[in-house]
Each structure stands twice: as structure tokens, then as C-alpha cells.
Amino acid sequence: MPFTTLRLSDRISLIQETGVANFMRCNIWHVRGRDCDLVIDTGMGLGPLKNWVLNDSNRPLKAICTHCHFDHMGSLHEFDCRLGHRAEAHIFADPTPSAAVYSGDWARIEIVNPKVHPDFQPETWAITPAPLTGYLDEGDVLDLGDVAYHVLHVPGHSPGSIALWDPKSRTVFSGDAVYDGDLLDGLYHSDPATYQLTLERLRDLDAEVFHGGHYPSFGKARLHEIVDAYLRGGQTMGSVIDWYNGVKATIGDVYAPQDWSNASRG
Ligand SMILES: [Zn+2]
Image 1 (cartoon, rainbow, N blue to C red):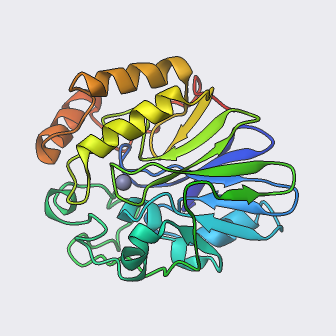
Image 2: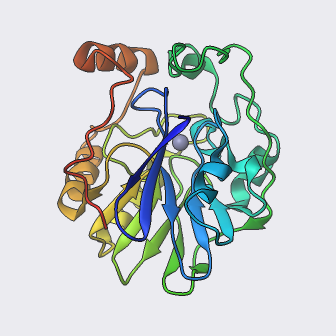
């Protein structure tokens, strides 16, 4: 199976690629609406995602990419409707390894399990271009008929990061702007000062459930802990290699499944 699906609620399912390291395994969200469905982020593209989603729904699909990094945009090209922020449009259209952050130390650590993906070649792996077919920006609304998601521009991790916010259910899909792990503010197009403003904004949002780009979903109390730790100078990755070795030493198997039993569901 190229993916696993965990149904969190009638509306929201989590899809994850198999054989990708725990910390790199992007959360792919399938959101069901009355008139159309959303796919939020698309993983590395190691297997065909669109057919996997269509097995579960026959409604029109809109694919949203929260930002242009390789672990989020890999299968975006499969979808006819591809939406993201214009600040990263050039990278979606031409995702060179360095532009999509698959370079340097990120290409040196093992993130794909060779037992599951024997054909994956880390040195030559290329990300398929996925030019955006439309732009999303602050204030835009994605209306699915029985739920409407408001677009938030949440730069810092990357300049065109976006989040989706449903004020009725008080649920946020936050991409890599915030998740329950060490945050990345040192990438080539990251901006820590802007990131801080984004995190303060998310902390002030009256949200109850955060579905991040990685790791299990969480609630308001945990969000406050993460943001406050970041603002105190913690909760960041620093050296990728040192961080990776630390993770391996702590959890042993970097491909071990995540525990979603206590995750917020929304
Ligand atoms: Zn990212």
C-alpha cells in the first residue's frame, strides 16, 4: 500500500505515505465537503495519490499546497486544480532540489525506507513540476458548500506558507507554520522574525484543533506550549544532521508509526 488512511471524523481523513521517515512524513489531509473535497498537501509523490483519494470520494477535488517544500508538493502535479500562494508560484512551476529544500543536509539523511521503496534514488530523485492553476491569499475563502475555509497567509517557515481556518469548528490546517515538533526557521527562504509574528497570530486565533503539516494533531493548550517554547528560543531544529542523529538515538527506528490515539480530531 503506498498510503495509509486514518479517518479522524466524518469530514476529515489523514493520509500518509508509507516508507517515509516519521518526521518527514507529511500529513496529507482529505477534507470532505458537500460540493467538493480538498486535498491539503500531497506528500513526496512516491505513489499515486489522486487515485487513492478518489477511491474514497467521487466529488471534484481541489488540491491545496500549504507551501512548496518537497515533502508537501510531490503529488501536486497529479491534480487538475492546484492552489497555493503566488509568492512560491515559481517554485511549484520549477521545483529544483534546492528551491524545494531537497538539498544539502536534507538530501544526506535517510528519509525514505529502501526496504519499502527500493527504486528510490536519493541522489537523483527529482520533484515533478506542478504549476499552480490558481492562487490563494489572505482573506480568500474556500467554500465547500457546507463548510468554508478562510485562507491565512502565515509566512516565516517559507514566504508563501498558507493555513486554512474554519471559524465554525475552530479548526486550522496549519502546514509547517506550526506542528507538534521542532519548527524550521533556518531554511534558505525562512525568516525567523516573520515566523514569530505568524506564531503569535496563530496563538491569538480562537482555534481548538490544529492539523499540522507533520506529527499528530493537537489542541489549544499544546499550541500555546509550542509557541511559547519557540518564543523562548527553543522548539527549533538547528543542525539537521545533529538533530537527525538525536532522533535516531531517541526513537531508534525512524520509520516507526506515529501514535495518533491521543490526537485532537476536530
Ligand atoms: Zn516545509
